[in-house]
Length: 385
Image (tube, rainbow, N blue to C red; front, top):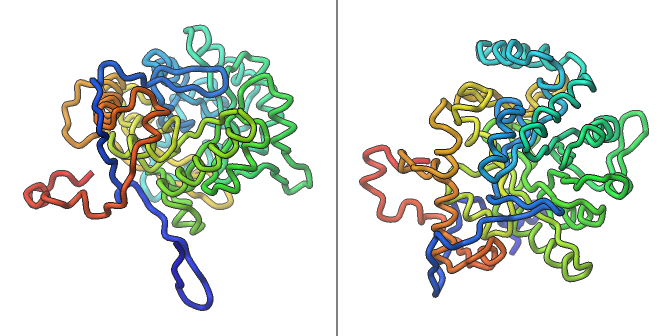
């Protein structure tokens, strides 16, 4: 449904996580027997969680740890770990910088060029531990860095920018044709980000294995403030899932959808899955892990841009080990720990044995459900996350 907003302009109503709720099913299942696995290309994971390709979140050690618990950590090949042999010093500079100077410090840190030998070295550090090596680069660097990553033994390549379309033209007149790129890649390719059914449909036609959904919802991203672009996540995921289902019926090829950003709690994650996501990608949530390289800080991927920074550094704290955040036990009651347990419990409540069955559960529009009956919680300052 569209609404007239003036001057012959119409706007479609869209929805965020706080405005919808999951309806319990008519059948319930013991959470211990549900299957939380999901796959992208030929690679299967025990839990549908990806750690963002952000330098404060995923370094090689964190990628190994995510793989150990059944998830996936994505390493940013345009980041600090491929620019510095010893990344601890630049990380410390960013962490210690004052709020007034941190953007400039970050621009200086990220001005050092990426070294191809470090790309190979970081991938080897992940692979030698028996973990899945998922790596990320921007469209402008996809041919050069993607080729090095492929030769180094990477398992998954993510081509990621604020907004990605099926063809990317650069300032020098060259362009990245994703269809040709995916066809020539020996690795499954995940592309993103996008937020519309049309863009998702075109990206699926490229032969990619997965698509990242979300523009600007991340806790450290300021794209929506700086650029004014974005779509609330629930609507973006639902639209992309509709396109995915149409594409699957037409071609028989299933493209995984990864909800990227905007999820603060286990409830948000479950809503993203019901909306149609196969995976969720989390940044700020995992930046709180004691093993995260940001040491309690988190910053946006586009923050170091020398032209138009679109990120910020936020203090998230070092709350708990990654294992506790993922699988508990939870020592907080706000839904930020034991995320896999929350997913399993919701799957049980809606009667879903698999992620695909969870995607068939019902969502309703309920913008006030978070406040219903919660007066005492509001008075005592709880339940605000």
